[in-house]
Length: 181
Image (tube, rainbow, N blue to C red; front, side, top):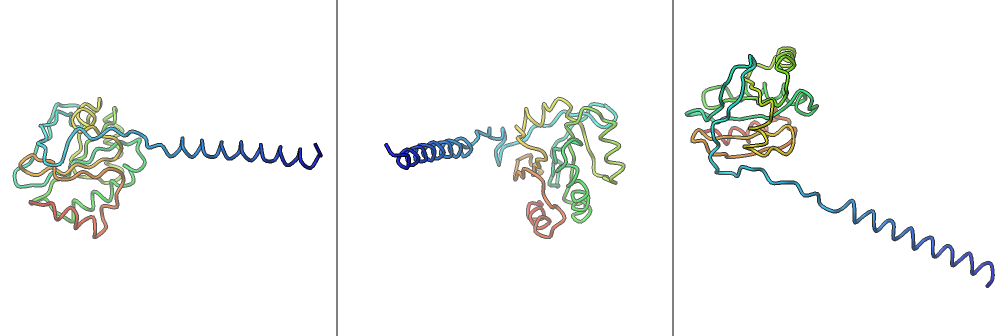
């Protein structure tokens, strides 16, 4: 064999191996990850949630007669959660309290950290703790933080929004306003 033919064969072999590796990587990285579904469906009745207030006292969250309940599941260790909290406060102020109630459900373990964050950022809507995530994971099947659940006064889940949002935008305000009873 001539040296040119050997070089061509080696180059062909290397290119084939490279192509096979690229195909393998594409297949591996493009496989859809199996994300478990939420445990609640639109229209499903949401049970009363057993939580703690920020003084470690037992409390509960349940539908409020005549009001849309917007439940935001968040944590202080979640950067997108921290980022959207001021916008949630602004949304709550714009929509008022006549037909709307925003409640935060923190999955943090330390109530002091939660209180400090809320005070420093002038967040005034009610917040509760779900330290063991029994409600966030057990009832809702939360898959990411933040996750926001909209509950009709009759207790039915009407909408779920997962991930960080710009709640103060006119589009988001209108989206929430359209859910009001």
